[in-house]
Image (cartoon, rainbow, N blue to C red):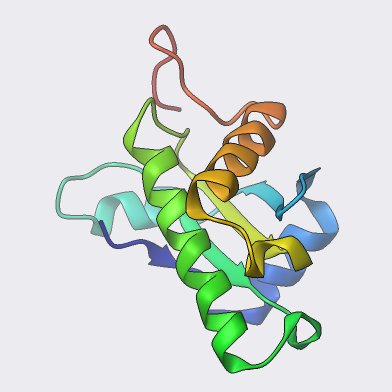
Length: 131
């Protein structure tokens, strides 16, 4: 599954400044309601709300190889979390890798990401509808 990416710097800045934040061992998650969600829903082929996902990995974490590995692991963890039980839609979600993410397995990052999203109230259980 492909993600809709956050491509504009001002959206990252808004998510950092105004969004809710949850910190875990391998990832920091910032979540902010996406004000362009309706416009994106109308442009979507299936007419459904989508999350825009942004990944950030600092140069402090290592060279290009380590940073790219951290991004791959974050993407795979996000795919797994979105698959089941699901994540609320219509939000900007920024995932910032922490130092342990460069060495962690994708299952560990998935567990941390799931815990962070649950702390933010973003996970759907069987009872909730999509917002």
